[in-house]
Amino acid sequence: MGLLDNLDTPQAQGLLGAAARMLAASGPSRMPTGFGQILGEGWQGFNDGQQAAQQRKLEQDQIQQMAQLRGLQIQEAQGGLQDHERARKKAEALLQFYMKPAGGQSTSGAGGALPAASIDAGEFYRAAHSYGVPTDNGSLNKIVDLVNGGMTPVQAASSLAGKNSPTVANSQLIQAAGANAAPVQGGARGGNQKQDVYERRMDLAQQLRSAGFPQEADAQEAVALKFKPKFDNSPHVVMAADGKPILVQTADDGTVRPIQGGYGVAEKLAFHNLGGRTVGVNPYTGAETADLKNTQSPDSVASNASAAAGRAQSERHFQEEQSTPQYMDTQDGIMALPKRLAPGVSPTGRPVFGPDGQPLEKKQNTPQYIVQAITSNAKSLSSIDAALASLGAAGGKDAVGYKGYLPNSLLNRLYPGGTETRANISDVGSLILHDRSGAAVTAAESPRLMPFIPLATDDAETAKKKLSRFKQIFEAETNNLTFAFPQAKKLAEYAESQTAGQPAKPARKSAIKGQIIDGYRFQGGEPGDKNNWEKI
Image 1 (cartoon, rainbow, N blue to C red):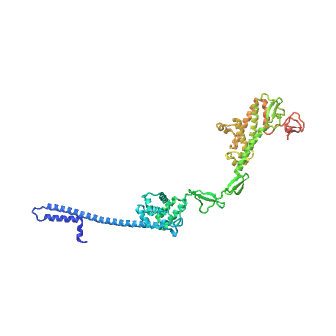
Image 2 (cartoon, helix red, strand yellow; image 1 turned 180 degrees about the horizontal axis):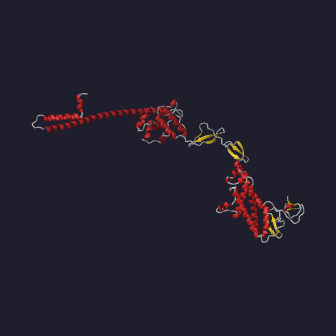
Image 3 (cartoon, rainbow, N blue to C red; image 1 turned 45 degrees about the vertical axis):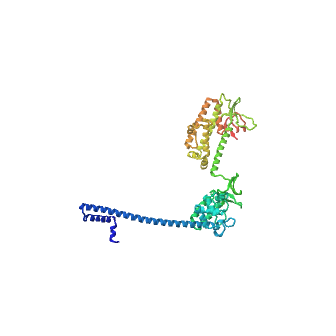
């Protein structure tokens, strides 16, 4: 660095210009010069010198930048030439790869060499450039396929460029050389199934990757995936050649393959109920491989027992209804006639005796509905007495209450001892509903009646009060009826004794010892005394 290097800046050049102007202005002159003029010339010289220095600096920078730009352009051009050369060499290497069979094997399906294998790679490259065909992997593949189909490289490039009118044969070759016709390396072309195309493409991709062409290998794998058969995820069971079931998958092209990994068919038996036993049958072979005896669960047993108890209760009601005689007025008095007769048997009436042992005389103007009301009340009173008796027996109080809300199957299992008590209370409730509201109770009437009806869900005291209340009601009704119809009083007494299971003992004014009348044997003594009659 010299001393003058510091004078190269715009400020230094401006000062030099100012000094030069001031020296020039202060020199001898015919015109007198003032001090102000000298300063003005110096200032002007400073500005001119500074601007000139800046301009020179700018021009030098531009020249330097242009030189750098030309250097970059030269480097880029050299790099482009190198890239072009590398691309050309890669294209030639790809052509050599496609034309030369791998492992020394023929690329012809018939055993002979394909035509493209005998042509120099440079000829393919020149033919492609001559017709403007790109030298990418896909275009070179098409040219090789067309040459293998019988064209020359020039004809193949010209056909792909569209610069000639292809014949029918050439058109077929061009179509065959499309994206879906991959060149085969190291083997013959297979059929046109998707599986074959997929496997050929994947094999070619593997060979390309091994030969050092990863990008081309990725492209072949991407195309191969388009031809990969799509298998159903749900396996199907079919019978193999050995007669055993196997799991297979089916593809969209009809390909069938066994499940990979050696998974067999899980044995799933089909069970059939044969009544007393259940057998398991193999659905694939028809062999019977399991035999189970049919049993019932505890809940099922309890449910069946509850249903049987309900049927027994219904049957009991029916039998009681059928066993209750019907009473008819006759000229000889009130006669009891059975409601049910065996086939071919004529009805036989028997006199109805009162508590005093005398036959009941013919009713005097007693309407039939009064008779029905008296007998119905007697039946209801009998059911109420039975319910009160079971409620007062041992364990009766524990049979009712909140536990009545349990399902029958569970209730009868947990509290089997209270079944009769609950049945008697429910029996009374059903009779009251039937007698008070008819055969059908509407939804509007049910909430109104339920608070007064004895229920198995009531506690023992409540159930007892309800039963006692209805007993008083029925007794009061019977008393009112017999008060209005005095001739029906004996009928009421008789009906009450019959429904209670204690028929009135015959009390006759005369009887022979040992005589049997209405199921009672006279033991002797006064026939009018009931204690002298023995039930047989």
